[in-house]
Figure 1 (spheres, rainbow, N blue to C red):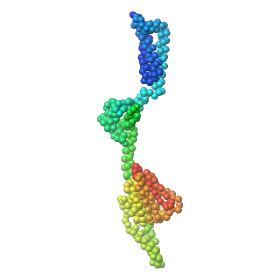
Figure 2: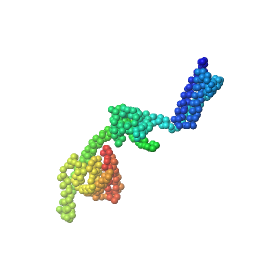
Figure 3: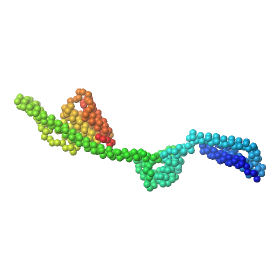
Figure 4: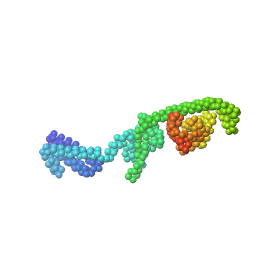
Amino acid sequence: MTTFSVFWFVTGIAANVLFWAAIVLVILCVRQKRYLYLLYDLLALLLCYFLVQCIAARTSDGFKHATVLSVLAESFVSLPKWLITLLIAALTAVMVLLFRNHRRFEKTQITLMSVKEATDSLPSGLCFYLPSGQLLMKNLAMDRFCLAATGDSLISGDQLRRQLFAGALADGREMKMIGGTPIIRLPDGTSWSVAERESPFEETTAHMLLVTDVTEQMQKIRSLRDLQRKLTALNEQLVIYNREIVSLTAERELLAARVRLHDEMGADLLTIRRYIESGGTPKDQADIEARLRRNLNFLMTGQASLARDEYELMLETAEKLGVRVVVTGELPPKDPQKHVVATAIHECLTNTLRHAHGDELTIAAVEREESFVITFSNNGDQPVEPIREKGGLSSLRKLAENAGGSLLISAAPTFSVTLTLPKEVPNVLL
């Protein structure tokens, strides 16, 4: 029996380590499909195997039977120990170089394993499967999501898709559809969107399931909805306040007109006196009668109601002020467009009386597919100077823009104001 030797014991351990390292190298090379390097790895494996057999034969008296391997092993172990140590060190260096080469290849080249590692690092769940449900690839995030949503491990891609889209989830989970996309809410408070795609794969079609964490987006949506409800309530209050302001403004205009017409009564009496004393033409008599009839009719009317419809209130105000309003087409029936148009009627009515000195306001309304177009014009004097937006017109433009519309002021060929308002108006502060 061979006596125990520390040298051969240590050498045997090193040989076994190199042998198993060579096996790992071969596996890496096959997985990477680098068949040229596979020859080097197989050669290193054979050398390691021969080294292990030689040391095993040396330590277990394996030279009793004369075989080719025993002869080669006896020749190898007969070499000087320093030379055997040098050969093992050289083989170790070669193995290290091969390992580094394979690792560098995995880090710099796209391989199946690198794709798998990349998908496993994604925060979104990813799953590819055949129409039969057979899994082609899945990542860790999809495994965790499937277990959290359904309570089961991911086995079939088609089964998981049917469960998610049908809402067949474990207790404590909630599914709702937003724009055709399922949103899964898990017990930990996170929300996940589910998307499905198709892509060609060999001779068939592969399906892909993608789940994405949308917790932050859902929180923002809920916050925006709360804010939208508050803005809607505030907008309704402001619309009421604006109606009251329009009514009060109309009352102020009526009061100013009453005072002005009252003052004109004195002038009318003087005109009548001169007509009686000096006489006049039938036309003078007709003018005096028209002025008296208009002024007396206006002074005898009552106060306007603050609760009246805005269009009705504006038309009544125009009638009391002696302005005929001609409306063609249908005006917007609902707020906020109705309030903007009523404000525009009030502003154009005021301009007709104060600046144009007219007595007829024409409103042409056209309803288009997505908007209302209302044009205002009058029969009064045309402006001789460039129009400067200030006061009422400036406020009207801002009001129209807040409602998503626009205001166009034209002076050629005649003065007109064109108001364009969309039919669908988001929540705005008018």
